[in-house]
Image (tube, rainbow, N blue to C red; front, side, top):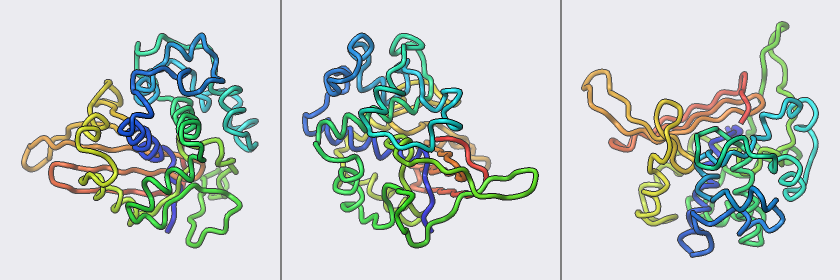
Length: 273
């Protein structure tokens, strides 16, 4: 069964960014303006790709806009137009000053991927990740596409369950637009133990605990933490991420020391990206 992933999407975005780093097409310390020439220069020249990956850019998150879900989320927007309208606000703090979870940053990373490759975000993920990993049941979730075994999302009201509100999937984009299955996320987990998609050195950069966040740390598109096992009292490293989008909540949790994987999908009350 195919579920919307919400913010689990971010780890696929970060993987493509790191692949482009490996090819010399992106530098982590280069500025946002270096790759998006149409972005406002006064802030774009302060923010690095690294800042976008670890949520400390200072850019306001578009999902935090007070009218986003009521007035904006149902309407389609081209990538460039959405960047200029909703991902270009005045900085809330200086880049690097603190962690603030931010969907605008990952939307911008998707725009950078498109600008550099000359292809759509959807095409790039399919070519660079889904096909090589054998993930045939993962993709960009277009509402209009007839998708076999697509799970519906629901929400609870005072009168019981109802269908979750409609969301134009061009808006979650590189921050939350993908669907997948438990089986495909297992394939994703397994390929991350290899160098098929990315070298060991660059994977270590991706899984480095760069900034304190969520009671642990944040890498590039992943939360990094240590958890004490109740029986053995051993500390185990967890590389994980949750997701929430209209009607869905999701979790992928990789206990990498023992190569254990937990994937949870829920199609009742969802958060937002």
